Length: 268
Image (cartoon, rainbow, N blue to C red; front, side, top):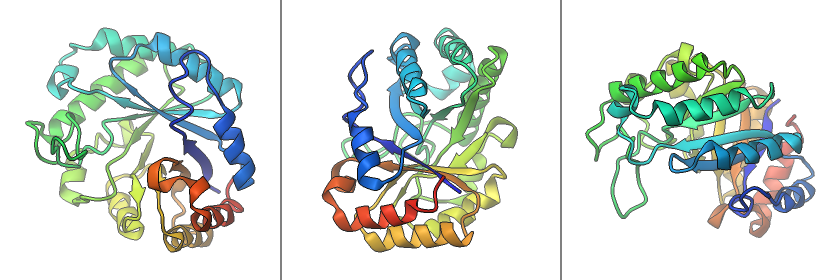
């Protein structure tokens, strides 16, 4: 059975003192506890800020998933070791955080073209609008992975996650670091063609899947995801994490919320 999680924008930003109120409210609304707490940390944040958040999530008996955003850090420079001090501080911090897994998603949605002013793409992208090649992403990824391994951070689960749109199997395959460097593969799913995304990624990675960002305003889309999970059609998907913001907020979409509640009856 898949695990459930949430990204709640109101949760983050309280600094060292985190408000779990929105999580407990959503747990009650959905009749199911969110096992994953997902948040975003850019590389201007130090472990001294995010380490306490990790401890509070673990203390609440939930599992952290951090999307680690390397804004404006060139992939070639990462691979060349220019940011090792920063990377190592996180690796050591995570290694010292106990045995509960920490899911770390890096270079997410790299397949989206960078189009300034549109909200599309990131500086680490390989889908156009940057100078990056897929091989640059692979080299940077493997370098980060090796630094974490060297620090003894065996509790970290590395998550490779393109966007579920702009799916090109050749470009994705070229940007895949390899099963030895990836613990979970997945994609971000917003009313996209989930069956296609599942089929394409199944050809690239042998790792289990997680969906770190899921959002829909269409109950039928959720029902389709639910039925495929229930029937075993998506047997490799181990976690679904809802992006509970903007038009995907479950508390303002009763039809979608009902479909999600039904889906969660089969979740762990």
